[in-house]
Image (cartoon, rainbow, N blue to C red; front, side, top):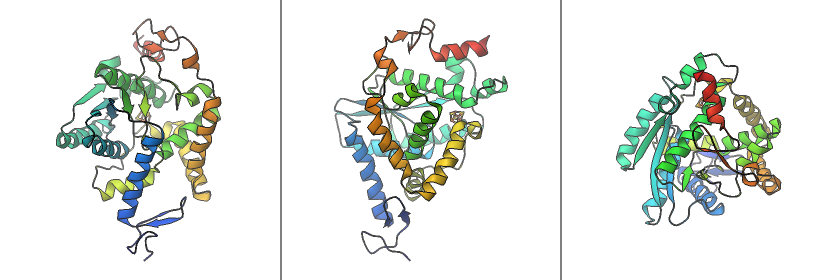
Length: 303
Ligand code: SF4
């Protein structure tokens, strides 16, 4: 049996990007230390913050909630509450959210769920059945962000914490590079707050997905192999496959992608920061034009 590089216990993981074999204790220590370092490095939590944790019911969001709960339990100057979005994906999100609410009962945190049904009058399943040429994710992403932002703002949040991990972040950067979508690329890391939008923090952005899965199993956090039934139709799914191949051949490439992005980010224009922020004439939410993207999409399926 291969031994841990930090002690004499049996190793349970080999981190190819760091060249380290780690036992259970040192693996958990290392993972939590890196999350806390990311939080400090990007100044993600400040005194007086009220953080809305976006709980999807997936493994990443449970780890995120656990870590933030631990941090907040020793700080009186930071508050935490939890928000979720039910897109209306039968057999998937409903099951994840049932698990989320039973997990939350033990923590006793304030919890609010918003839904596509309440917000836009349709579930995602209903929108998909209408046969639009766009992928389900292009509708889902817009409305989910809208609902999270509104729930967080209505309950006085100063930040929204999401469970995006290293794989998610590297995929998003690469997708926007390939599409040449500079505006979205810049929005992955806004340099200044934008009125009406609650700033987002991603404390897990430097933790690989497989390490989150392993940590969840070791700590008995709710984990699942369930995947959204629409995920395979997304461009992201192809990018994930490509990145997995690259990571296998060049360990650490995902870290290189996010480090490279951090270097070029200050050079990118930030359209929403430079232009006037409008209020959508239909819903009153902040928008980059007279009518926001959510209202434009909603108009199409309510016609
Ligand atoms: Fe929504 Fe796409 Fe994610 Fe499914 S995979 S939850 S449709 S963004």
